[in-house]
Image 1 (tube, one colour):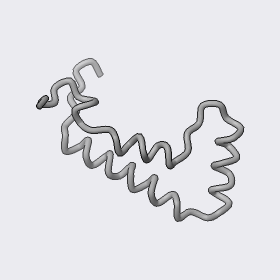
Image 2: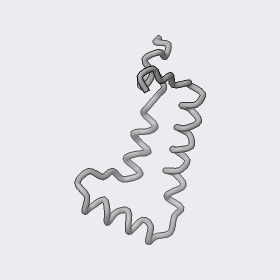
Image 3: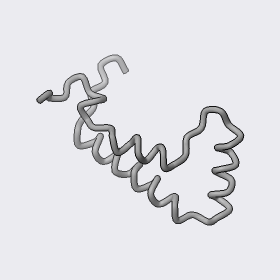
Image 4: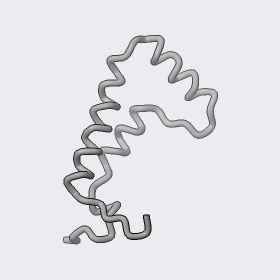
Amino acid sequence: MRNHVVKQERFTVIKDALLRQLQNWKLNAPYDHAMHYTKYILTSRQWTNEEKEEALKGICFMFISPNAPRD
């Protein structure tokens, strides 16, 4: 992993898939939500899916790749 090169197209595909997964989670059964928020309350290092979604929207290719073109 020393010389791992991240391609922008692949980054976009993975980011979109993860974003869709987080957004589709809202459609799960109510008991899934109850278990998730119970775990959230009881765990010290846990983030809600809404927090993850907001953080993911703020990440762009330039943040993760040292070889990305800079403006």
